[in-house]
Image 1 (cartoon, rainbow, N blue to C red):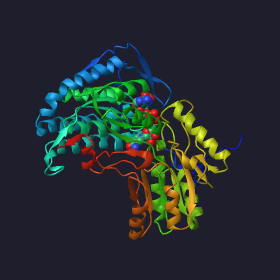
Image 2 (image 1 turned 90 degrees about the horizontal axis):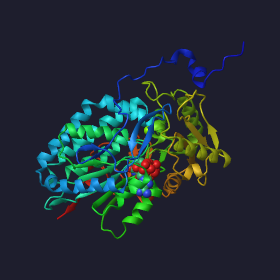
Image 3 (image 1 turned 30 degrees about the vertical axis):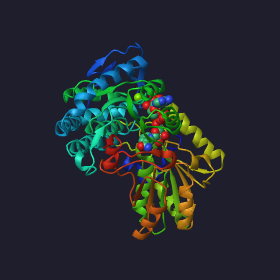
Image 4 (image 1 turned 90 degrees about the vertical axis):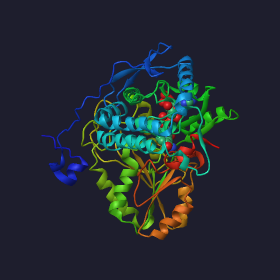
Length: 490
Ligand code: NAP
Ligand code: MG
């Protein structure tokens, strides 16, 4: 009889910890074919074209999504422009009521939306259920509260809405990014044309039914789906008063160039390559959990992921050993299973990108560590991966991988940690782990990053502004700072 092959987890813990499958069974209510949400109705695209939305969980088709062309985008802007007059003149307290309704309806249907988000994007159901949905609702609640208090945002000044805002979002937090964009725009009296990402349009189109149920006046929010060309039509439409974009640096640069001289307001939330810095006086158990959360949350498809771990040299072996042990306990597989920690990679293209960058890490001489884990045969999956002996010049230390891959570098002194952490074109986020409050403050004042977490990682709140430095973009989302991006101050 051939010897039984043990996974790393079985070698460490025996068979005791193998869980039975626990699939989430709530229906996602996904329609076979969607329309565009324009003027308060689901309409057939003028383009007459559709594309398939597939689930990265198993590669199967979920639905047909309209491919909006320039005429569709124009129809969305025209209705948004008409709706602007009455929407912007509504008293803030009235606008706030709609936002409260949207938040409550999202809460009512959160299980259904969580399943849809997981099926469409591949993230573990525990994350869509416990993070994406509650946070999306929280953004609407938070901004509902601002709608009638805009006079207090900047005392002595009057805030006026901009007009129609065009918003383009990525695939890593589809519904949450929609909430980050739509909630402040509506609270401040703007109307919206939003384009979700091609691979994750379903929750945005389902969200249209929430807007209808909330009784939102027609044309206040319009959702147009499609790929890059549709995004470009949203960005370049002459009726757009402002563009809010979240996505890659490449597309961010194209948008920045195309808007130059147009007078349109612009906010760009782009990529990151965050340093998560661990000093030798840090609480190591917590730090290991923070490192794991920092890079493996949402399969590492996180703009602020702690993808570069900077460890003080004296503890690097200890940290690496602990991380290897912890990785062996992560469950990779079916995102609909409630025990799954790491789900599916969002698309085949993203999987190929991760594989190529991991290969470059091996070719350039870094040492790779992956736990033995059985990946599902269908769908797109990648095991949690650590790289040690990484130098700063390696591609895996410089480029955003946007996958479950951690590059480990070392430092000896705080000065060296800061120099290495800031040695990147990005500046979105960073983490600092140490027992000393003074060291945290010293590091925070010298790190070039928009968000810095101390002895924790990936913590978000609608009242806390989020955004980057350098090539991570400009403008903030969330909090008072985020509101100001959607108004003119008079
Ligand atoms: P992406 O390729 O730039 O796409 C973002 C959005 O732009 C998608 O809706 C995309 O449509 C659309 N688009 C593509 N080409 C366009 C063009 N020429 N004009 C206008 N729109 C266009 O980025 P992604 O791969 O979806 O997302 C990953 C990136 O987003 C990462 O770099 C990540 O760091 C960043 N991100 C940043 C934040 C932040 O807050 N800073 C948050 C989340 C993600 P299609 O999808 O249909 O191509
Ligand atoms: Mg999909």
